[in-house]
Length: 140
Image (cartoon, rainbow, N blue to C red):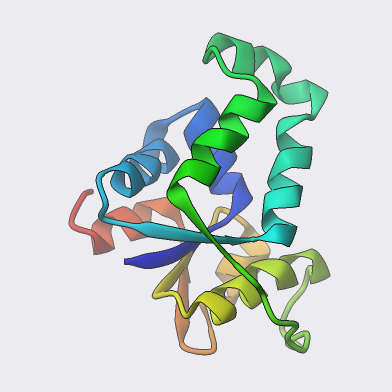
């Protein structure tokens, strides 16, 4: 399965595990191939450097840089072409996820973002949470 895994799922998976962590395990096992754009990678870098994650990173024996490197090691970088903002998009910051998904021609967008989940799909690409993605993979 080709997927854009939104940064909220990546951070949750890296730092807490649970179902987002199982999505990352599916990536490591080759069941899911993830795609990121430079914009999403820069956002992930910024998020991992937030003070509120410092203790959790330390608990996992990670730094923001090593956590980012773990993601970069399994993600394929794509050049995301600009797309028009869909009228139904409530948060314009989510446009980067949609643009990456279109440019990478993914099968699914995996996110915990309620604004994206409300869309249910975009340009024929289903948008689902980690639980739904694991069910789709037969890994629930």
